[in-house]
Length: 233
Image 1: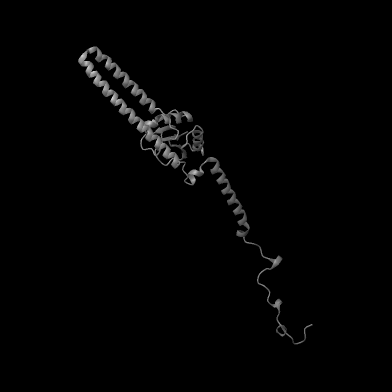
Image 2: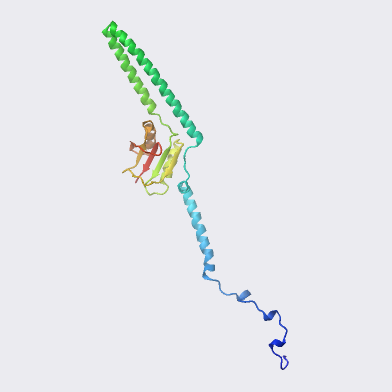
């Protein structure tokens, strides 16, 4: 019991005279709306990122998203260059041999002309037969399918992952340098087509078309890669 005449200031101050500010313990105030919603937002973002990653991996679009190109390795490029150099040397050797043979036959034809007309006709027939054989050999060399040739498959159908599926078909068929891509704003053809730039790649382009079930094969200039496949609906 307080003594008469004593006031609040008459007692010594202790810890109970300085209570902490705000609610304490079970008497805490309600959390803000942002603090309550934050865990749900984090869960939704993580789920969306996981779903996008799974879709990109399954469809093959992660290569285009991260700028990954399926360009051939240095060893494959060097091997292709060596093969091209060897074929060029072989063609040059064949051409030189053919020229020397034609020169010899021309000399023989001239000598035969001086001797008799009948020998001229025989020599002419031999020359024509030789030229026909040379043309057949050149056509056979041109018709070689090179599955190391770089092929780009462009998806203009609007179907996600369709170019990647067709690229997998070509890789299964033995092609070693195939990449899937999307249109870059250039003018698109009216129908699905296989374009090739050089005449030496015609046989390979026809084989690509046959593998993918495409009927149209055309020669085009200004391509970034030797063979381009444009997929349309």
